Image (cartoon, rainbow, N blue to C red; front, side, top):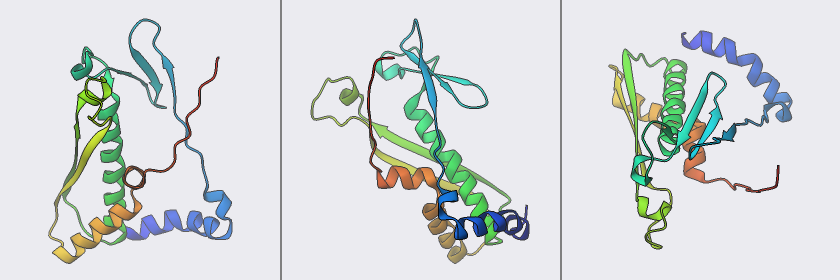
Length: 169
């Protein structure tokens, strides 16, 4: 897809959102079911069932997906789609590209071994390696706009309020 095709595809959507801001507000949902026999959660992805379990560093078998890995994978997926869309819109030709995410965890926190150890990622690094002849100023703009428009990156970076509740089924 080229820039004109992207603009043509998104123009009616953007116009609708400009005239009706409420139409742009959509609630995305995820659902999972606790596994009956293992320490795992079956997450409906819309394409398949993803079974998440304990990371081997916390006693897991390594056969199930790790939710920390899934978070990084979501970041890579969103950042990859966003950088490709922005590059297309800016007419920056990309021959190929890769997106990498790494996150540092201290598993003592989630296991309750050390009260001073944080639970969660202490740092996340997102890196793009793009095969392009675009000048550095264009790449700088591409990175800036990718950061601005990547939903998962902005969510992780900004830390929105999260409401948690529990009730009997």
